[in-house]
Structures are given as structure tokens and as C-alpha cells.
Image 1 (cartoon, rainbow, N blue to C red):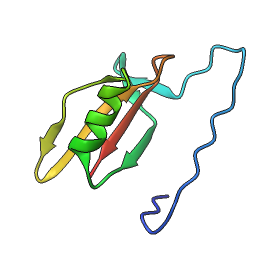
Image 2: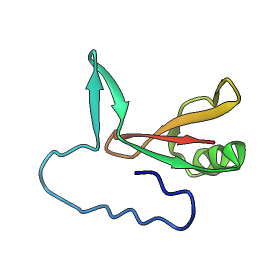
Image 3: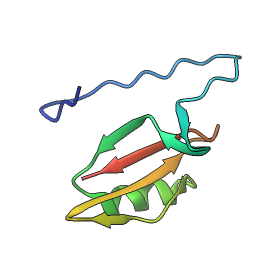
Image 4: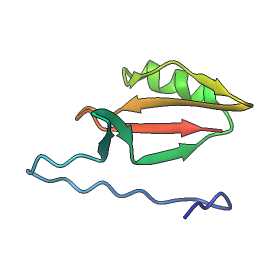
Length: 80
């Protein structure tokens, strides 16, 4: 379900288990959670300024997106 009409809530639960928020497709890590942002360059810079591992911004048919990784290596996407 996608909800672009209001605030969203993401809850991260700490665990001692080796649990990840991603999966693989053909042995390539894929994201399981995506966020929307109308300011892709600004959000990318914000993450970069806070030493978050971010990939380059990509453009695809008027759609901009990038991936970033949390300290445990989980992969997420930001798009607009």
C-alpha cells in the first residue's frame, strides 16, 4: 500500500538476531522499503552530510531516485 496523503510511521525494532530489511534478486541486494521526497538532491545531501552511505541519484523517464544504506547494510530507496 502506498500512502502519499499524509505522514507515515516507520518503527525500527532492535534485535540481537542478524535480521535484515532487504532481500536479494539474482544474488543482488534489493531494497524492501522506499521513501518519497520532493527534494531528492536536498535529501541526498542531508544523508551525505551525516556520513550515510548513499548511491548516486539516478533518473529514469522523469523519475529520480537513489539508494542508501543504514549502518547494518540494509538498503533503502528514496524516489520522486
